[in-house]
Amino acid sequence: MSGFRTIALRGLLALAISLAALAARDVTAAETAGPSIAIRFTFDRPIDASMAPFFLAAKDGSFGTERLNVSFSSTAGSPEALARVAKGDSELALVDINELIRFRDRDDAAPVKAVFVLFNSAPYAIIARRSRGIHLLPDLDGKTVGVADGDLSMRLWPALAKQNGIDASHVKFHKMSAAVREPILSAGQVDAVAGFSYLSAVNLRDRGVPGADLVVLRYADYGCEAYGFAVVVNPAFAAAKPDAVKGFVRALIAGVNATVKEPARAADEAASRIDDGDRDLELARLRTVLVDNILTDEVRRNGLGGVDPARLDRSIDQIARDFKFRKRPAAGDIFDDRFLPPVAARLIN
Image (cartoon, rainbow, N blue to C red; front, side, top):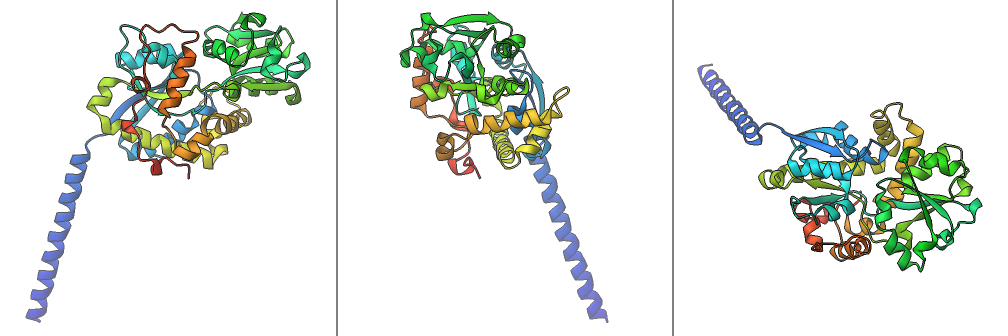
């Protein structure tokens, strides 16, 4: 009995030591991991379903897994979002990469760079009515196109027109508020409108314009090389906390994959964040975005988030048709690939 007690005591002592070691190891790991890092993220426009990957990354805990505490806010456009990031009022933002290219040309511009491209293809498009005799881009000759103030698509129109043999002087542009863009086309006051394919085209169908009467002339289908919306980072934050930026990108990739697998759930999550959000409308919008802008052939080959430097350079040349650079930026001035995981981790599952 005495021997049994001795063995039992030794066993209990060994167990206690093991448990203490495990507890110490857990404490050390927690101390090493440190507290979560706060990230203020800015969208450059009101919420719509194209932003669903960010919301699913938050809802599914992907940001939390990376020990990131991400809060979201919106601005009225890419220039304002870029200004926030440049000043450090936001650590990261979603902006039009073509606006970033112009921003970097300023003498006093902070060296803000993109670290993840969400829209591999820019959503720029002319949305026209077939009943006005428009079926292809050259059919815009002699037509009137409604353009909202500050529409970025018009910055690439000169290059697109030249590339497709269109005399730009034969197309009349009627400036208007973005709020009346779709109503004016649906009322027949213009022949077409410039805008984003996943916004204007879906909105017009929702307004009752027959889908068969709408033609979406996507810039990408006519030789426009531009990338679209991309995540940019404050340079000081990127230098001080590179692992946080890498973690954000990993979490966003998880959000994109979840969106691809469950678009209905993703649209629900986006609609829940919009005042009077329409789940069906946002789902239609999201399906358009996935097909036209996110899951392109380039992405299926090379994975999410990156750029082809040669293509990015060509897109900068297209911008230069309308924008006179003081010093033309190179692709490396605009995009930083150091925060991307390996290609295998970026392929669509």
